[in-house]
Image (cartoon, rainbow, N blue to C red; front, side):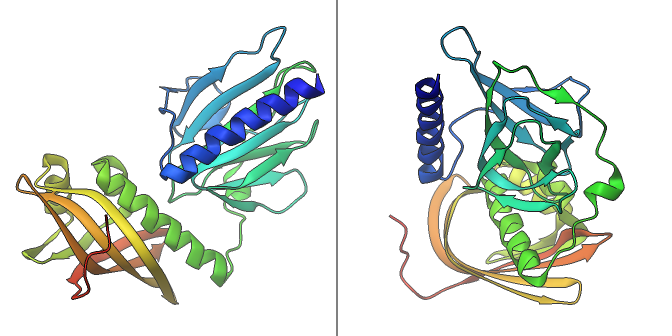
Length: 281
């Protein structure tokens, strides 16, 4: 039994490592969960159904911003291998932990806990769960007070802004205008080499493919937080398709975020072309 467990964990780690190396998850989102054990939108993809030989359940879960599971426990424990985004993990009686892509969480047997996405970022993981001692036991909903009880330190806020920015590049590459619509403030402005415009035109441009932000290679990131305003600088090479033509430029991208009701919203995005050579291969 111990050998089987080791094999399953090594398999999960190998797949997880491959996903990290490629900077994308190798698993699809799966289907939207219709079970009554979470709030918000959660996608599930079952990777392994336990049987008499391999008694480990493997599943890939993806959470929309703000989505979270109810309080629950695993009789046999569980491993969470975080594959994307930023999320929360909390055990009963302990503070909420902020977890990031690349983290591995051990949910001990019989310990009540919950996990989910932050209000601003999506979140994904592979859950490896032994079932020989019983299936997951679902408990009460996570209350709004519990979910909002996290207290950010300046360092945590800086990391949160970096995670939001990184997620934003992914959404732009995927033309995910629904998630970008939530992130962009209604009065947000976007300054490009060829002009500037507001939120509605930016979302329309992304959706139509007028500008396809195909890939952003980020070389350095810095964040300066002033009260409820965060200014992020990204030194990037941007591979984009503009008017059907593929182009690559070096940019210093300035992103301005403001915090409203505990949530970060993008107020502006400015592309300033750099004179350095393009590094992207």
